[in-house]
Each structure stands twice: as C-alpha cells, then as structure tokens.
Length: 181
Image (cartoon, rainbow, N blue to C red; front, side, top):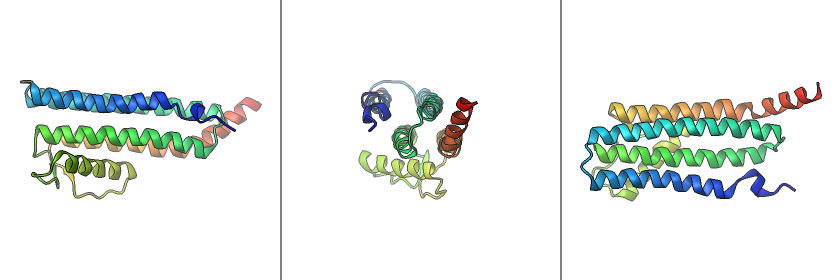
C-alpha cells in the first residue's frame, strides 16, 4: 500500500494554499490601507496572476513526469491533479475579486451590493467554470485587465486538462517502454 504522503505532500500543499491566501490578503491590505493607485494595484494583480500561472504550469509538468516515472496509479495521479486544480481555481478566484475591488466595472454579473463572501463565491463560480470548460457564466470580464486574468486561467486550464491529464497514461507507457529498451 502506498503511503498517502508520498502521493500527496500534505505540508507542502497546505503551505501552497496558505501562500495563495497570503498573497490575496497582502494585496487586499495594500489596496485598503495604502495610497497605491489602482493602476499599480492592477499591474501587481496581473503580474501575480501570470507568475502563478507559470509556476502552476511548471509544477504540474514536474508532477506529471514524477508520477509517470514512479508508475503512480491513475486514480492517485487524478487526486494529485485535483488538489493542484483546486489551488489554481482558488488563486484565480482571489485575482478576480481583487480586480473587481480595484475597479467595480471589471466584471458584469456581480451584484454591486454583494458582500465579500458573495463576491468570492461569484468568482469561485467563474473560476470553476473556466477550469471545467463549461463555457457559460453570467459573470463576465469587462475590462482588459479582467480579460487578461480570465484568459490566463483559461490557457492554464487548457494546458492542465488537455496536456497533463490526457497525456499521463501515454507518458507512463512511453517511459515504461523506454526503460525496457
């Protein structure tokens, strides 16, 4: 029986969730308590968004190759990728919320009187739909920064789902075949 900690590094994943939340809190506090202008804050959110997407994509590729080399069963790999996808969804949810907080015109479909919890749920909904390729949401990006963040998530989701999840079995088979040759 495989130890869960070899499949799912709990401490590292908890730290990653904390870092995602910490980045959001830091930017939220900076937005609320400093005189940093909305343009600079928007750039900080977008740079963070794109940087996280690159880190997520790189980490997913590393985990794909590691899982294939270790001959990890498919269901365990899916668990690992599910955790990674939940981190990405959470991360983009926070990015969307920050953009909406900076400029309330960033997204349509979000009630202007909604509290933080409802707004976060709306963006969790949007982010989940982006990752599922459902293609429909009543929450839509309206500004260029919001569209850049949304497109970044869609591209990351495409790479994650299409390349990583669909290629796991074939990569595992090719590595197994290469080791026999």
